[in-house]
Image 1 (spheres, rainbow, N blue to C red):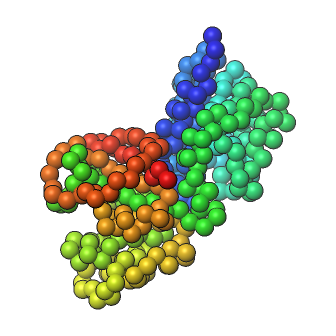
Image 2: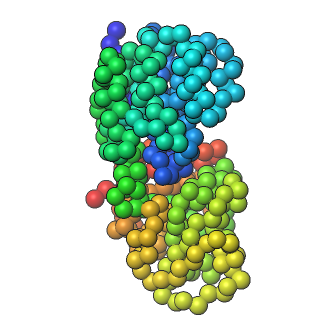
Length: 336
């Protein structure tokens, strides 16, 4: 029976998209471990910089599924998981296959080398979506191949590159994404639109982004804080895009400690930042259209409000559609 390698890679891709926007300055990466009879042993991803990589999380889950040894479930530090697997694997992975959206890392940094771990576990077949262009972490495939493992490259390559694009942008200059929430009838006004779970997801992204961009009219009317309080995170710097420089300084966003607030009529300050979130609606969309890489929409299952993106005729390609509690989350790129 022919194995559908795209199926297993797409599981990894979908899992990684759940953490897109949360792993900065690392890439979002997913990993699937397949058993010798085609069974799915694990589908995991990288969650946060400094924490275990996708391959380590997947191998941890797969080890438990194969052995039912709960000792590994108590481990959360990447180095400790590496050590445990190397000492206790007993060749249980030798007939397994591993699918990773990105070439396993070769270097030892905040976490040990995933390529070395995989090689030492003796996993028979490795399937890679995209190769790593980061010189520090690259050449993991060479480690795997030299260890006698069978490495297949470019499985669902374009989808994996779409997933990787934010990281590539971080590496070169910056990544800019535009986020909004809307109802089924397309409205964005009239109070809170998305669910609490979606708002926590946005706050988690604010916690790792460098700069948040918002329009002056929104600041004046909504009087926001624009912090990451729902996840006890840090607040990003703010760019208020406005021709008028006078604002009521009692608006909460001005009182957040360790934050720089810039008021400007253009986007020139973006050159000083790497990971940039823009929040807004129709007007801000138009102003930022030519500098935005990806779009993130939280689609809430309800009606209400009066205003939205009424005068825009752009079309999008959906990169990933997921679900966060009540809402549908869409990562998209604009068709050029």
